[in-house]
Image 1 (tube, chains in turn red, green):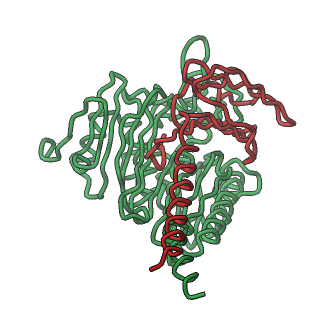
Image 2: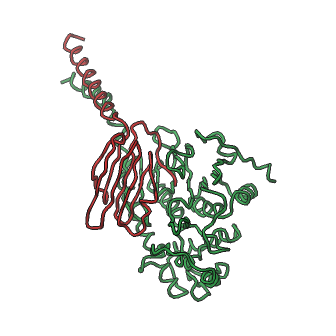
Image 3: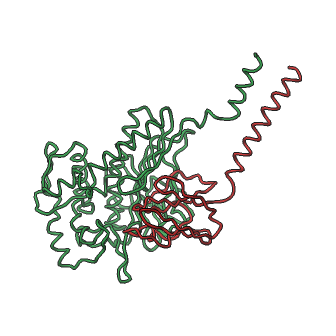
Length: 117
Length: 335
């Protein structure tokens, strides 16, 4: 092997390491809340920061509140109110079927593939 | 040029692209819930799309609430010629009704409607109204012959909601197997069924929701198993300070208050897991444990009581992990 081979191999390894670090570092940053409406992402919010998100569309409204590391649906004009009844969660998801709204807690070190309920 | 080829190979190996290419996952709304289907392997995307289409097809047949469904037509006319799937599932539902001595009851729609669980206009019916409605609940006299179902009681209405998702997941697993898929996870609104294991050979990690929503009751790794939980805590309404859960006791017509907060059943059959989780929830702890101990069907159970006791059956002892103290139920203690 000559000098140029070493440079090429070194470059490949360096690129891989950079790629790996970028990937893993992007995964960090704590749990966050992902809101989707009819399968389209509405927004993502850190679970660690208190926030109130008002989602309004043709089917109605849902008020999502992030408070002290928990998320819940404070109010909604859906007919069954199951989403409001779900209460505060730290993991898993809240679904409002009539409004096709999903509020999901996404954890970066989550080894769980599914939650039964 | 010679030097370029090994270089390209090294890049491909180090970047690890090959390992992730075979997983496809999609979520959608069906059967009055939110579902996620994940498939690993070749043609994973097509398999997920096919599964979604099949689930929606079954939903159209089996829903008791959609005006165009077979079950709706049967309830309206008292008898009907149905598809093979619908009549097969009714037979299964009637079998579990017999096996559980009525704890599982697919003929309670009329009573459930009195509570407003169907149209979400909740109210508390009088004892007289309940007694009248219960007179029409006679699943034992329903007949199924050559896919023709006859309810034989005027006004009796069936609802397969307590078994349809488990039946569907079992059916989709068969469909995926036919397509050569050997690794998939179906999450039909909290009814979970795993096909095979994860691509690395380990089991799928399934967490059991704690009704308090702050943590999990525990988790277990499964391969080729369905995991289904029943608990009133997901769907209920409040009136005058009292909570009314949607799972009804077919003897009283009222929400089952059996001392259990949630029941999880683990079995190779999704249909069995779905039907029995509801049944055992209605039975309460003592009867549920005896039913499990004496049954020749192959399943495991996780019971969580309103007092906060967590109990698992012996088959799960080496698979279950929890931060909560739990005890193991052993079969010989009940024989």
